Image 1 (tube, helix red, strand yellow):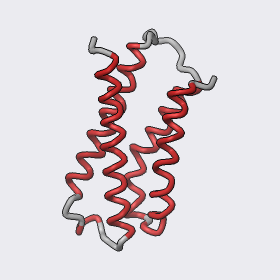
Image 2 (spheres, one colour; image 1 turned 60 degrees about the horizontal axis):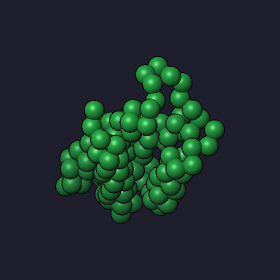
Image 3 (cartoon, helix red, strand yellow; image 1 turned 135 degrees about the horizontal axis):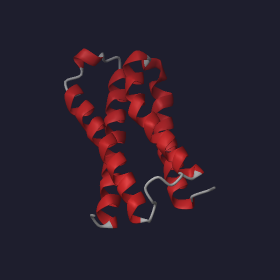
Image 4 (cartoon, helix red, strand yellow; image 1 turned 45 degrees about the vertical axis):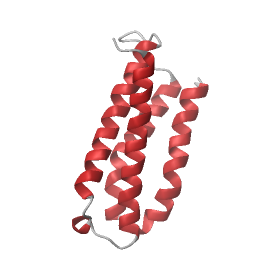
Length: 125
């Protein structure tokens, strides 16, 4: 098993990759760009997918390192985090389908990330 610090850094790197990719896609769509016109589209999709994977692996690695047993029930805060990161995974479809929602999405991304961080730090039950 890898050290706690490794999983934490992997998790934070995944968060950064995901947010940068979503921000890039959103700004491009908000400025009137189409999916096919985005020269960085493959890079952004790759960053998004890699980021979500790193969030998942890092998050569950952290759970293992803090002592969650396989098969034990997840507490409320963890379900909220899983829900939020699932939302981050599927939200990549929104910018080009509804470019008018770009401003709201750009404001919502850091708020959602903050909510996920608050769940991890305070662990409300």
